Image 1 (tube, rainbow, N blue to C red):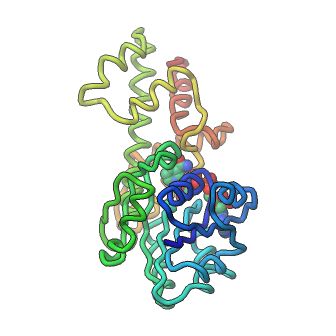
Image 2: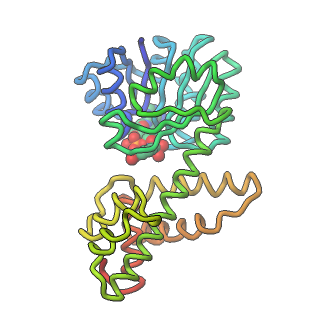
Image 3: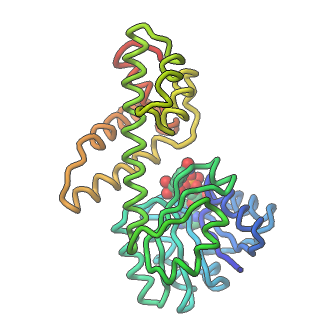
Length: 292
Ligand code: NAD
């Protein structure tokens, strides 16, 4: 199949490679020429705009930073909707606010373009090995048409509900991850300060009820003092903004999420916006005068 792909960053590049590996033709576009060059070397063909991508492809995937970029790429000048034919399918795999996915989908419908929101979990390593978890919102008939293509990039693709449901699910994921990192940071500064080796604490509790994927992945980084990303604090701040806004829109409070947001803001003010989100441990280390 000929697939248009727009947004060739940390995630987009390996996702394109996996589509090529599965035998698809990929027409690629990004505002950064070096990112286009990278995927062209891997076998994709280059395009000059989102509009031009849409002119050539019946299926278009976007993998962009946030809602404003998705709006611009889809609805803006030289955007997807200027070039797309009726019947085109747009799968936005960026992590954005569910409300923005719904608004963009309405604009798509005016041109006969069907949209799914399909954000991912798993980060760069799972984008590289093609084992992302993909959470989808939209019509089942459209999902059924693209499911196999999604599974060229992911280990699972679950239809969670109508348009926006994919991003609501992704925000739930991001809330859990953020609070879980804070919980292990608090527990490991506590146990270290009280005199127990963090390696022993990890070994002893990781198989029990407190164990988690976050604990397995992030506590070794905390012990090493490694804050190389991974998933950057700036991106997690973006997701928690979207979670808090969406929570307030539906009329509920998110007290822990709000607290972790302020911890992330503190770390960003301290110059760690580009560090891994596990740097929450640094906040606790400063607070307690204890190195995990
Ligand atoms: P990134 O910043 O590395 O890549 C985004 C790409 O979009 C860049 O190459 C940028 O040049 C391009 N872009 C921006 N505006 C554009 C425009 N108007 N037209 C064309 N291209 C444009 O981001 P990423 O890490 O690849 O993340 C993409 C999305 O996936 C984000 O929503 C992020 O939250 C989500 N995500 C990231 C990770 C991760 O670990 N990096 C994990 C899960 C989900």
